[in-house]
Length: 276
Image 1 (tube, rainbow, N blue to C red):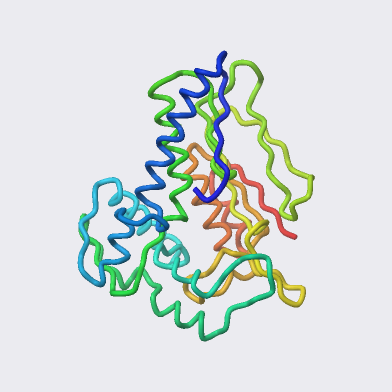
Image 2: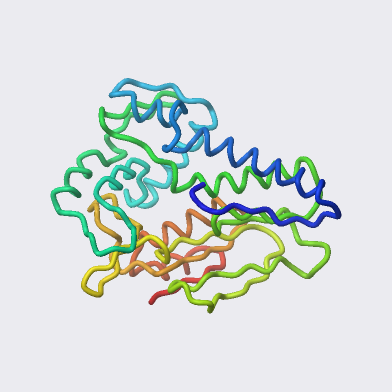
């Protein structure tokens, strides 16, 4: 998942805690091994190395691709699972090393879902293009872990993968789960929330950014330009029924840039939007 992952649970013994943790870890590794672009030999690797030939995908991957298509259309191309190749130009390591215009242009030649042919269960990408489901994969893994926990035990649990989290229900030994939203500047001034059900997800540039001549360049890129989204918030946190729903709303809000707040206000979910 590229981040710390944890399970909080209300159990009476270390053995019970370990059993629940095993369920969560098993599902996290299953999703990671199957859908990560960093793994060799999985379905994503097969798609990305196909060299222009069609690849038949399984039902779960097909559902993820259908969801990605929906987001691509709703965002007018701002959410694009082929945009991962922009990492070849951008390295968000906190330095001042901006990529050259030529490097960005070269990467953009391999970006654009409209160039793909998707007729489920067959996906064909032009040679050299790739897909990256990282924009929806971590939140999906959280939701899958919650479903697995609900299937095996009625104990109150919180699953947290890198700040994207969901709960099986309200805890029995306190009023609610206490969750902190980290300050965008990394200071100790976090916002504390009480969560009894549902999920929270956050998008932001607290850890992945570049800074040049006093200007901060966040890691949320516009795949239509190859540059960071202009006037994007520092962070957006959304509360929703599922982590996937919360995650995509926070991401879409970041992609809206200066219109993030108006976009969020049109939704039916609670949100916290911060700017520096």
